[in-house]
Amino acid sequence: DAKTTQPPSMDCAEGRAANLPCNHSTISGNEYVYWYRQIHSQGPQYIIHGLKNNETNEMASLIITEDRKSSTLILPHATLRDTAVYYCIVQNYGGSQGNLIFGKGTKLSVKP
Amino acid sequence: DSGVTQTPKHLITATGQRVTLRCSPRSGDLSVYWYQQSLDQGLQFLIQYYNGEERAKGNILERFSAQQFPDLHSELNLSSLELGDSALYFCASSPYGTGREQYFGPGTRLTVT
Image (cartoon, rainbow over all chains, first blue to last red; front, side, top):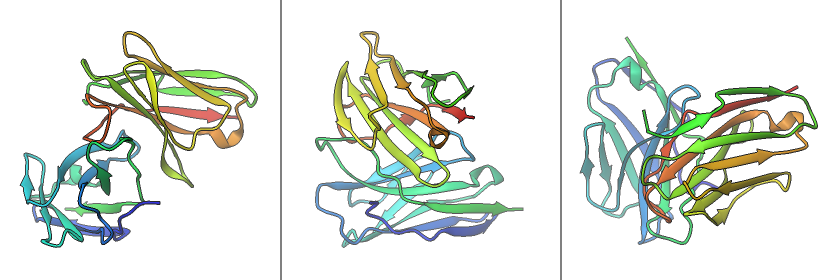
C-alpha cells in the first residue's frame, strides 16, 4: 500500500500557483519524497524529490515540513498543460528495491 | 521525451494468445522496470532488471515473464492472455539499481478481446 495520502482532486486557475499537499506521517529517516505526474495515459514523468530540505528545479518546488510528515509540491505558474494526476511517493533511497509504489494521486485540473 | 522507447504502441489480440512488449532504456541506464496500469488497479510494479539480472519482483503473474538482454533492452512476455490483462504497460529506466528517479516510456496499450 502507498505510504502517502493525497486529496483526490484539486482545481487551479491558469497562471496561479498550484499547491499540492501530501501527507506521509510514517516516513522513515532514509526515505525520500518523490513527485511524479501522469498526463492522460502518458508515461509518468519525474518531477522532483527531496529528503528534508526544500528543493527547486525548473518544473516545481518541493516544501517538506521540519518533522517530514508532510510536503507540498508547488507549480509556481500553472498552465493548462499541467493538468495531470500528481503522485507523491515515499521511497527508500538506495534501498534494496527501487520500484515505485503509486497511490491514487491528486487529479489537478488547471482551468482558464 | 524521456528517452525510453516502447514498442508497439498499441496491441490488440485475442484471449489465450501470447504477446511480447519491448522496451529500450535511456542510453546508459542499467535498470529497467515494468509497470501495469489498469483502470481498477492503478499503476502496479511488475518486475525490475538491473544489468541483465532480475532485481525485484512485484505483482507479476506466473503467465508473465521478462528478460533484459546484453544490450540492456528488455522484453515483457505475456502468455495465455485473459480479458483482465487489458491495460497500459509502461517500462521505466534508471541509471541505478536501487531507489532514485525513474524515466518512463510512453507505454504499450494492450487490448485483449
